Length: 368
Image (cartoon, rainbow, N blue to C red):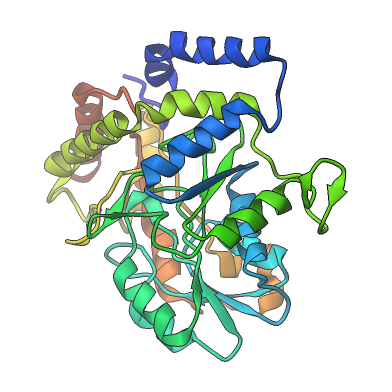
């Protein structure tokens, strides 16, 4: 049985007619940028995420960059980020001219460790950027308390955790201003690049709306030097359709994850996902760890089973960040995760038989 790492077919087949209707509506509406589809999606996503505002933007990286710009963070400032995040979190900090300061994750949850955040704060620190990695919420209560104590902003990177929560409060609704991605592979994915910013702050929402649209509130009147970082009508329409199904898809992802956990528990040296008692997990990715990662991945490939590594090189070791001067083992926890993690197939429409095929293949790798 061939099992790809990701298969959009089951999800998209089920909503094909709804998506075609959305396309037809935009196509026949003759208004393709900054129109009713965008307004409707922004209102719907804000309601879903329980925030006052949602502002659609071009992608997740732009969402984080605009959030930092709205906070007037720039050269000379520092922003605390996880040492094991996807590069986009760090690039957003660099985009505004600030310096990323890495803090190690908790080795069990893979999310930034609050105990390390306070130790990393200096007089130049302006913000903390918690990343809800793989779909599990960070320990937001502790992070917000640290931010309050030191008068810092919190910018959540919620790209992988639509619908997750910590102590019942949704990710993307804790921080002062927060960015998310609707890249096609996300739990809520567009059919191209897309993103959004969420906030409860009137002034920040207004600044972002201006910055994303050439620095303009009124056409041809430019108040500031802005950017072209808008979410287009077509992607907004597609996302409005998908948003209606997100809760059901999340429940499906959680069920698939439970099948994996039940059948892989105690197999070889596998370390299975751990969820903090107060955190929700929406399983954007199902990530295991093993000291035999490369051999296991090759074994799965030979059996027709896809897998990926999220992520093989931590940001501090990327060529792009050589100027920061970090050497190997500067952040040993992030590096250990990078050297041992493996993401198994998990997608909406995946059936139990396919999960069992993956887990049986893994068991044979260890036990023959």
